[in-house]
Length: 234
Image 1 (cartoon, rainbow, N blue to C red):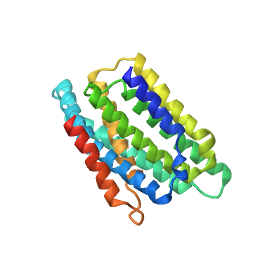
Image 2: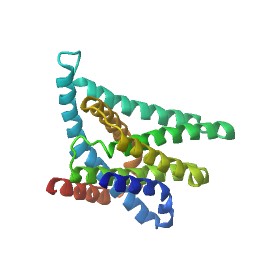
Image 3: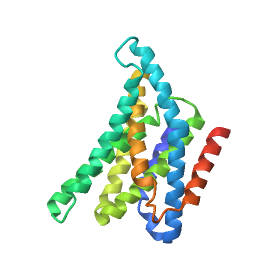
Image 4: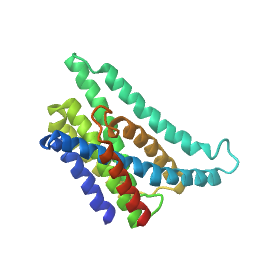
């Protein structure tokens, strides 16, 4: 039930994307910096240790296979490289040609719809199946979506605001629904979790670390410290 509620919450974040335009620019940047700090804290304090634990699980499952412990980290690297490649493709192809720009936008949107769907799926399949862990995962992903969605809004404007945010919300809910009705083995879960970890690390670096000329370092540090403190004390 908690995972279902969090799935609705993540979908709501997508639907509310772009609302930060109504905030004062300074406050908006403070929020983005704090959200980036909290997301980075989640990756380093909770997600990467779980990826390391997943690597040990895969190593045990594969026995004497080739590079058993490195497999999960290779998958995480694949997630990082794949979304880096998508971003390079989008950045280099986006131009004045309207039709080409629309096609590039669709590729970008679909890639993040799949991304959102996998994150929604993992609400029902956590490496550590406890309510606090699920809570921190949901909060970190909500902050993550808030920042990446604002990047979509800032870059694409009305074309994203009209339908794009709905597509991402639906993708999250579909992924969550699939997660609710399917089972996945520990080995397969480790692989999926590692892939998402790599993709999140890239998107943290790309969107959630603000432009240094406009960054709010104090807000970033406060967001980081607040998330770490809550995670360690819970």
